[in-house]
Length: 68
Image (cartoon, rainbow, N blue to C red):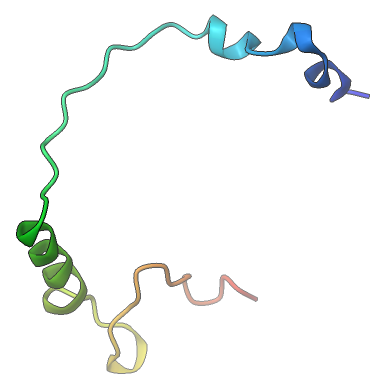
């Protein structure tokens, strides 16, 4: 019963319209080209954290015991 409201057209964009507008934060420029490849290499192979059994941890690895 509760999700009926969201299916109707008159409720569309309600929350987004209510939230106050935040100014865009200034961000550091992202590396491109050779510099980006250099950062990727350093992150994956040079500064790679060592996991269980001496193998490097992969970027999306779940914590031990999380998967059951």
